Length: 395
Ligand code: HEC
Ligand code: HEC
Ligand code: HEC
Ligand code: HEC
Ligand code: HEC
Image (tube, rainbow, N blue to C red):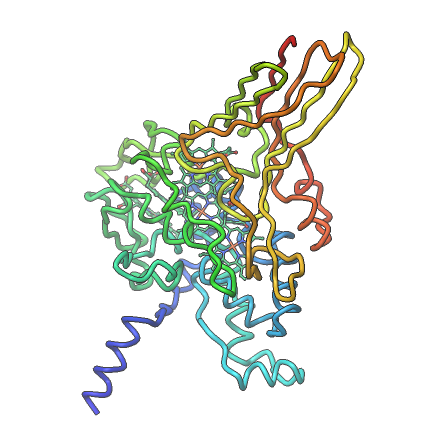
C-alpha cells in the first residue's frame, strides 16, 4: 500500500498538474485592494485580467471553433486552454465518460468538471494568485509542459514576491529568485512553446529571445520609488521601495506600437528597398499566431497616387483535409515572415513608371483577415490598424 502511494505521489509529481485550492480570502483581487489598490487597478486594465473566455471575444470564439472541429465538448477545450489562460482551475482533464455524457446533454451543474469551469476562482483569469502563488518552476521538464503543468503552487495564503524582508498582516510571504533576478523564467511558464493539437509549435518566445533583458523592464515599466502596500506595517509606516507597474501593456494598446519597428527606404537601380528593423528582443509579430504587420506602399506623381500595394507579414495555418484553420488546429504552418529579434528584413519592390515619390507606412493588426472572418470576430479592436512608422522617399 505504502509503495503504491509512493508511486502515485512520484508519478503525479512528474507528470500531473496538482491543483491547490485557493482559499476564499485570496481568490479575488478585490480582497487585495485595501492594501494594494494601485496594483489591483493597474492589473485590472491589463489583458492578463481578460484571459478568461468570457472576457476576450477572440479567445472565446477560438475555443468554440476548436470544440466544433475536434468534436470535443466545450468544457474539455476550456480545460485544455486553461493550462495557461486560467491556471488555477481545479480539474486538469476530462475523461471519456464525461465526453459521452456531455454529448448526450447528461452532465449537471454539480459535475466536478462543470463546477471547475464555472468557478469564481478562475473568473479573473491570470490574477494575483496565479503569479504570486507559484512556488516552483520546473525548467527541467519537457518544453511542451507549460502553465499549470510546469509549476507547483504555494499553500493557500502564501504569496511569493520580490522582497526578502516583507511582512504582511493578511498573508504569509516567501521570496523567490524568479520574482527578483530572473523574472523571464516566470513569463516563459506561459509565453513559450504554444502548440496546436497536432504538436505544431506556432509561438515560442523563449527560443527566439535575444539577450538577457527582462520582460518586466518593458512590460511592467522601469523600477520607481513607491510602496508595495499602503498598510502601515513598519513602526506605523509603509516602507518606501523600488516597485514596477502591473499594467502588462502590450499588443492591445495602440499607442505603444508607435516606433516599435524602424523603417528605412532606399532606391537601388530600378527597385525600391524597404528595410524594417526590430530593436526588440523578441520577434515582431510574435506571441500569438495570426498577428499581422501591414506594409502599405503608395507611389505618387506630385500629389496624385499612381500606384499602391499592401504587403501582409503574417502566418497561415492549414488544418486537417488541407483546409484553412487557426493556429490551434494546425497540421502545417506557412513560412515565418516575422522580423527577427534584434534583426531586420528587406522587402524589394519594382518602381512604377512615372512615380516621383513613394510613401511607406507600417501598421500592426491583432488578427489577419483570414482568421477574423473565419471566427467572425465583431469587436473593432481586432481589425484596427495600429500605426507603427512612416517614411517617404523622392525617386
Ligand atoms: C491588510 C493589508 C493587506 C492585504 C489585504 C493584502 N496584503 Fe499583500 N502585503 C501587505 C503588506 C504590508 C506587504 C509588505 C509590503 C512591504 O514589505 O513593503 C504585502 C506584500 C505583498 C506581496 C509582496 C511580497 C514580497 O515578498 O515582495 C505580494 C505579492 C502580496 N502582498 C500579494 C497580496 C495579494 C495577492 C493579496 C490579496 C489576495 C494581498 N496581498 C492582500 C498587506 C496586505
Ligand atoms: C503575470 C504575473 C503577475 C500578476 C498577474 C501579478 N503580479 Fe505582482 N508582481 C509580478 C512580478 C514579476 C513582480 C516583481 C516586479 C519587479 O519588481 O521586478 C511583482 C511584484 C509585486 C509586488 C511587490 C511590489 C512591486 O510592485 O514590485 C506586489 C505587492 C504585487 N506584485 C502584488 C500583486 C497583486 C495584488 C496582484 C493582483 C492584482 C498581482 N501582483 C498580479 C508579477 C505578477
Ligand atoms: C499563467 C500564464 C502566464 C504567465 C505566467 C504570464 N503570462 Fe502574460 N499572458 C498570458 C496570456 C494567456 C495572455 C493573453 C491574454 C488575452 O489576450 O486574453 C497574456 C498576455 C500578455 C501580454 C499581452 C498584453 C497585450 O495587451 O497584448 C503581455 C505583454 C504579457 N502577457 C506579459 C507577461 C510578462 C512580462 C510576464 C512575466 C512577468 C507574463 N506575461 C506572465 C499568460 C501568462
Ligand atoms: C525592450 C523592451 C521589450 C522587452 C524586454 C520585451 N518586450 Fe515584449 N514587446 C515590446 C514592444 C515594443 C512590443 C510591441 C509593441 C506593444 O507592446 O504594443 C512588444 C510586444 C509583445 C507582445 C505582443 C507580441 C505580438 O506580436 O503580438 C507580447 C506577448 C510580449 N511583447 C511579451 C514579452 C515577453 C514575455 C517578454 C520577455 C520574454 C518581452 N515581451 C520582452 C517590447 C519589449
Ligand atoms: C502554452 C500556454 C497556452 C496555452 C495552452 C493556450 N494559450 Fe492562448 N495564449 C497564450 C499566451 C501567452 C497568449 C498571449 C500571447 C500574445 O498576446 O501574443 C495567448 C493568447 C491567445 C489568444 C489571443 C488573444 C487576444 O486577445 O489577442 C487566443 C485567441 C488564444 N490564446 C486562444 C487559445 C486557445 C483556444 C487555447 C486552447 C485550445 C489556448 N489559447 C491555449 C498561452 C497559451
